[in-house]
Length: 103
View 1 (tube, rainbow, N blue to C red):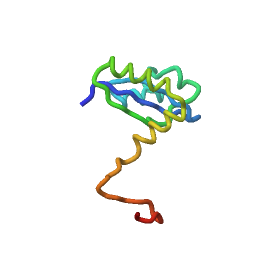
View 2 (cartoon, rainbow, N blue to C red):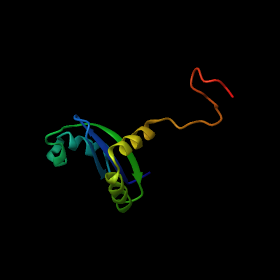
View 3 (cartoon, rainbow, N blue to C red):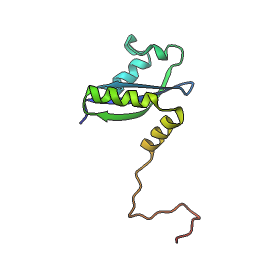
View 4 (cartoon, one colour):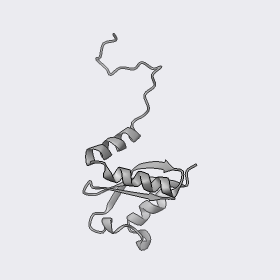
């Protein structure tokens, strides 16, 4: 199991915040105001949901990945979140959307 995590939090306005931590649940609570240790980013735009997490082997790897994610455009970040939420495709299932003919 990973010791470090890269994460994204969505604010009430829809803005995205990216960070690293060893405990995502604790960090989210802090961003919501618990303990006064949340990022300044959330003072005017409260945290709403943790929308993305990605494991990292160590702090260095987590920091590098955080920097890479921060360089992504908003559409790229949303695509990363969507990909993480999508169930993996099962190639043995051969499932097609309804109404699509089998070739």
